[in-house]
Length: 130
Image 1 (cartoon, rainbow, N blue to C red):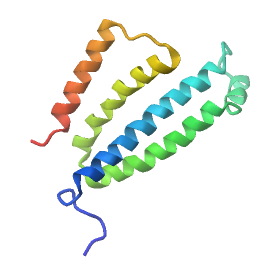
Image 2 (image 1 turned 60 degrees about the vertical axis):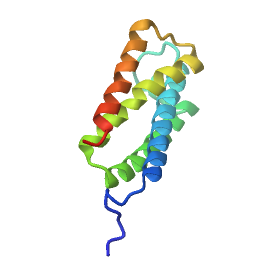
Image 3 (image 1 turned 135 degrees about the vertical axis):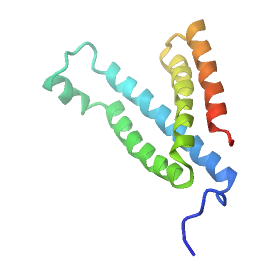
Image 4 (image 1 turned 180 degrees about the vertical axis):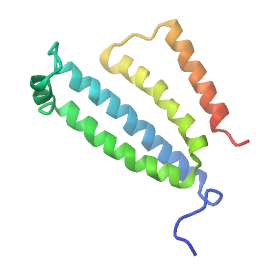
C-alpha cells in the first residue's frame, strides 16, 4: 500500500487548506518583494543595489516566501494534475492587487477590477471538475 494518497482519495478540506496556504504565501512573497524594492529607493541596478537588497528584511522575507511556496506547490502537484492546478495559481493575480491596494495604497481602477473579475471567472472554469 502506497503512503501517497491518490487524487481521488485526497480530502477536499485538505486541498482547500493547502491552496489557502499557497495563495497566502505567494501573496505575502510578492508584497515582501515590493517592501524590499521600496527600500532600494532610486538606486540603479548594480552591485551596490544588490548589496543593499540583501540587507533589507523584505528581500529576506520574499526569499523565505519563495521557498515556502515551492514546498506547498510540491504538495499541491502531488495530489492534482498540473493542467488543473496551474490555472488556479491565477488567484494570486486577485490577492496581490487587493493587498497592494490595502498595504501600499496602490490604485485599482475599473479596468483592473474588470480584469480581476475575469481572472476569478477563469479560475473557477479551469479549476472545476469536468
